[in-house]
Length: 158
Image 1 (tube, rainbow, N blue to C red):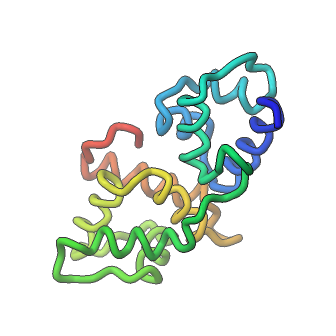
Image 2: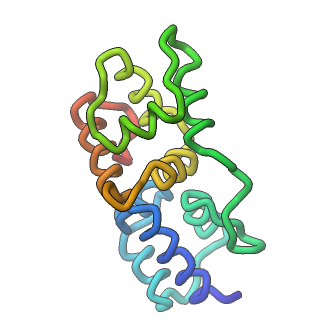
């Protein structure tokens, strides 16, 4: 598979995940122009580390360009963000909160942990899992961005 074909896979996966080129660029530490050129097949070369960073964000594997082995990102994320708190957020609750954009007060610290500490590939896949035809992944990403600004989270990619 050549770089142009990989770029097409990246484009498809990014759209499916509801991410803008700007999101992928920030998450991977690249420019939006680089992501655009990669997706459009006009990028001549991109180092392994940079390409792997983009693919990791989207849950793609360098060998097969198929989703990586993470089975339920919502489960992983819910367990991870509930570790330090008495109130436990279940995967179904996390999914509902992500879709609604309404963060119950007792779960705001959990959601801050999601935004600040959860690995970005897990967040991206959890968003994709939570998305429905009525609430696409792009809307959920907007919810995350709004929360990040509202709560002034430390991770600057939002």
